[in-house]
Length: 367
Image 1 (cartoon, rainbow, N blue to C red):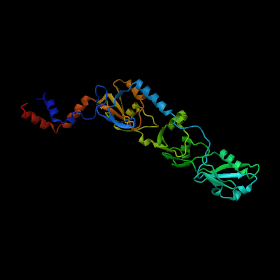
Image 2 (cartoon, one colour):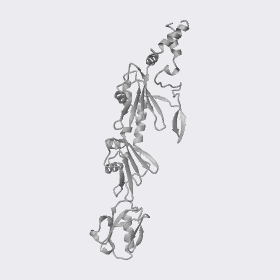
Image 3 (cartoon, rainbow, N blue to C red):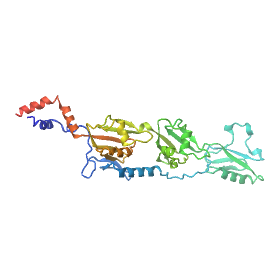
Image 4 (cartoon, rainbow, N blue to C red):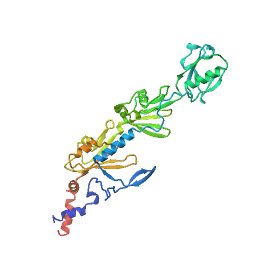
């Protein structure tokens, strides 16, 4: 009877109890059994994902691709340009030796009332000249044009123009900065680093590896931490009117550790850097009594571009690969369960409550 007891146990258990926990099953081609949603050519499709072994070649390939992505310039003109006048800018125009053309009241006038405001059409009214279109022009261009127009009425015209109040061009800085809001752009070109500084700097919860720039209906990812630590100036792009800069929150940058580890938990990524070995250590390591070290997986959703990696850690030197393999936010790290552990858990689930019923069934069958 006792030789047949394992058979009875198998018959008595539902299928879901035969292998408690999760396993990564693949077909003969190394593809997942389950179809996953993926984005291809702008369309969502279902496809199986290949499980890729974590090797030195894979780590080198991923690092080269990461450096190329971080060092990529935005597809816009990043050269410094002069400030261009726009609607609601307030200009102060001073014509030497012709005080009647200047602001009435001179220095006694309130600053907020001084100068002349460019209207919504980009036009500016000036005595003798009438409406002068200044929108989209630089200060030297407007100075040259106004001098030419006034020279029709006065001899040896000398004038100066400066912007008293910059209102035409603005960018928004939101997210994890101390003073989120809208910043006015002036004659000094505004870069990403300058915008974050003018917004009070980043908060302690900011993720400078994850800064998003929304421009013209598109979203660009910037690694400002690489600018600060490595001097990667390609990430310090010039901003333009209408840009929205969003500094990410590091609380959302976590790795989820599951399976046969000392403690299943979500592990916080610090400054955008965490290796596979670090994540395992944060979870109190692999449980060698219950785990299958050859089946350590990193599952990466990747914004509808799923990837699955496998580390065979049966040899201690595999931990070098684990230390060199960088994780990304929202990665899931899973450590597989040993076969003997699965069977042990089967017995723990059926004993002692189901043991009497199984023995009774065996007695009725004459065993």
